[in-house]
Length: 86
Image (cartoon, rainbow, N blue to C red; front, side, top):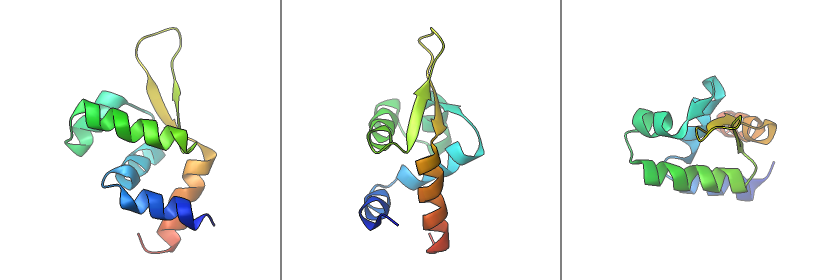
C-alpha cells in the first residue's frame, strides 16, 4: 500500500469523493462539479491532480467533451481507503 498516496488523497477535500463517483461510472468534469457542488475550475484542478497520480484518465473521441474514468490504480487506492475506514 502506498501510504504517501493515501495521505495525499485524504489531504484534499474532494479527491476521495471524486474517486467514489468515478467508481460508479464515467463522468464529465462538469457533471462531477455539479454532483460535488463545486465550481468547474476547482473540479478541473482536482482532476488534474488525480490524473497526475494516474488515478483517473480522460477519454475523448475527437471531441471537446472529455469524460473521466477511474484507472485500475484509482480503484486499488479506493479499495485501500475503504479497508482503512475512510
